[in-house]
Length: 600
Image 1 (spheres, rainbow, N blue to C red):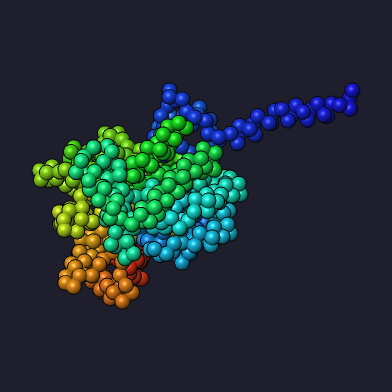
Image 2 (image 1 turned 45 degrees about the horizontal axis):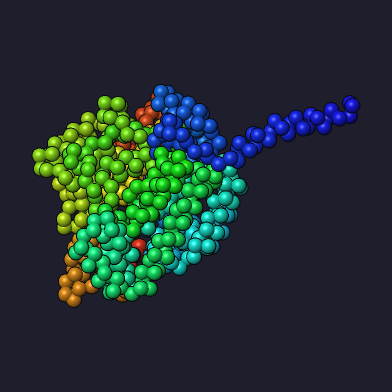
């Protein structure tokens, strides 16, 4: 019988190890109704932790000081690296993410720009996956992926039916390959819910408004039983080409199936973190049907507190870059929100379908933060300038903003008022106040562009990583890089959201609308070249002047090293480059660096 002992021992080991392996590969368990609720963004990168361990970690996060990040041996190297597949090639989704990552001294690495497509030309999904397959992942801390770029070739392509559902599902298999090859690298993904309106382009110019109205009324009429609206809907059905409706619905049905497939990948631990972003929305529309289906699926799986659905799109990469950095350090940034009025909390901002405070909460959570009260020692204050605010309320709001900045508090400003005549840029009352008080460079974060979701999703990640970057104390070179990156992006937002949107774009659009009016949705090449040159000529001197008045020659502390206080002095602006990324005036690309020196 002695010769059978090894066999018995092996069987014993097999019985011991088998349940552990099964446990590792098991799907996420559905949480019970009595399970403790986790805030969005609190789930860690590891998919194998039990609920007990997660709860214990949450208590540690709440009660103990946040741990210091690991220190690389070489201060000349970036503190971390993130692979990003952006939503498309626009500055707001790609360049912003790179600049925000630099605030934490993280290098954000993206595919070559020519693979990402341009406007109505989709990205090359095959070459993108080839590029992702040959990246050296040995020094990568996290991967952030736009599912829409991965499977369709970008946001605009996601609104067209050109990619079949079968092709899209097949392309999602990349996530499984990545997790299999690099199981220790967390995967952060974001996926857009299709908006109501088709893309504004020359090709859709004649019918897109009618199709958007049809999509809105298809949801609104059954819910309101409004006879007048029902008649309008019938007229639109007769007016619209049936092929346009069919293409629109084919894209919407396919996109919903991909949304559901992304939830499945999260359930199976292939994706570690997932957010859904509702692209430009209205109170009524076919997107509401999609949201309902997704909410029901998330509720059935117990993921409602883990996978958010909220208004936004372009800022998804920024939020998840911030989240990835903070998750790596096992930290959360505490944010106290100050609204311009109590009424502004409940306002539904343009192109959104939920109250503003819903969007604020979800944007903070998605970017790795948590909301606290002002008396709970926040890491920074988020001032939100919004509609629904009267003159006296605005006066008090701006007075408190100035007082907090002058007191040396960390303050970020999300300006989502979007007043006339530009409807997409800064509130010039705040610009005037900040200019008078000389406080532009004192802000921890700032944004004021397009939608509330876009603005919040830019200001919050930038502020988060500015707070985080103050822990980078291993070498003055690193602290200097991070501080310069913060100041560069801060001025970048005033250059884009104020100087461009409030001044240059407003004037150029007014000129284009004079008889004979030219459309601003998509320029022919000759018009693009002319308008692009005008933007360069008008914006460059404004940026030079703003830099000279608010940053040039100033010094900023970067900390104490070897018992010596160090700071950087900003000398000049170098490499300023301005151009329109797409053939329209909607946004501009602004590139530059600060030239600085480190001094005692």
